[in-house]
Amino acid sequence: MSTVKITSVVEKDPKGDFLLKWEVSPDQEGDIDIYSSLSDSSLTSFTPVTTTKIANQVLTLNPTGSGLREYFILRTAGVQSGVVANRVIDMNNIKNFRDIGGYFTTDDRQIKWGQIYRSGDLSSATLYDQEKIRRLNIKTIIDFRSDKTSGKYPILIHPTIRKISLPLSPMDADKLDAQLLNDDFNRSDAIRYVQESYIDIVENHKEQFGEMFDILTNDANYPILLSGSLGKDGIGLASYFILYALGVPQTVLEQDYMLSNKLIDPVKAKVDARNLPENMQEAVTAMLSVNRSYLNYVIDHINNKYGSVDAYLEKELRVSNGKKNLLRKYLLYNF
Image (spheres, rainbow, N blue to C red):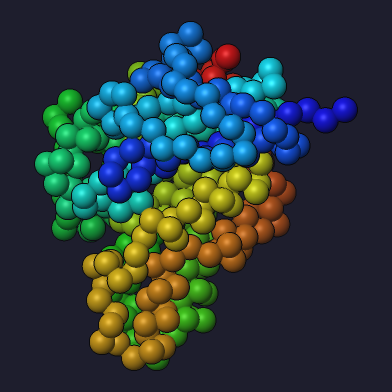
């Protein structure tokens, strides 16, 4: 006997409305009920919005509050979806700003929205961006940029927000500039460089990752924003380890990692490659993108050297079962 399952996503459209999309499996006819809330703290806060046909699969909804965050639940055939919210937070000058909540674990628990965000460089944040960060109630920003880059591009944040520097020294803007001094640098060189940089991050920055997990296991620090130069390399690995520790399946871990490609436009990056030779343009694109081969390379390295990602987390980053339980307590819904 098949169990009905609802999968859904919500995005913000250019007008600021919510675009709700869903699939019901197995395929069936009938109605689907839409509920919304400005808070995800309790299912009782969700109120009916409308009822539509399952076959429509998409619905545009006007914000009922500020339009910053809104949460939705869909119900049909006696079952309901998880809590659905927009993952990407639109900013003026901050790249790759998104929520890592909403994913389901292998034991079908859901990660809370609005507890951990990830983003690119905050140094060019407009007043609008800074106010949005404040309205997201972010209490702690972990800045993973190198000391050199953070000194060159300081970030301005609301004085009530705590900033913690945990420099990972991944491929930030200065390292990219240095590579571009070599006219023979090509796409293959760039891929190898990124892969080896990932190995450097996981081998030589264990203390920083360990401190990150210490911060995450103190509920007074939430909501937390993980920030880096482009929010894709060191931040990508940090997010991978957090979601892994919570029990998110590998396919979803890869999807979250790869989402950076949709949110970073190499043309708009600080490096202007348009006047460079074709081989250099391809190299720049490879370094400003994410690729499954980058992630697979470093995970294979961890598995070969430490036996598993679990062993790496426990032995090298001090992520014990007790810490994992605390993470699940703070970051998973209980309803």
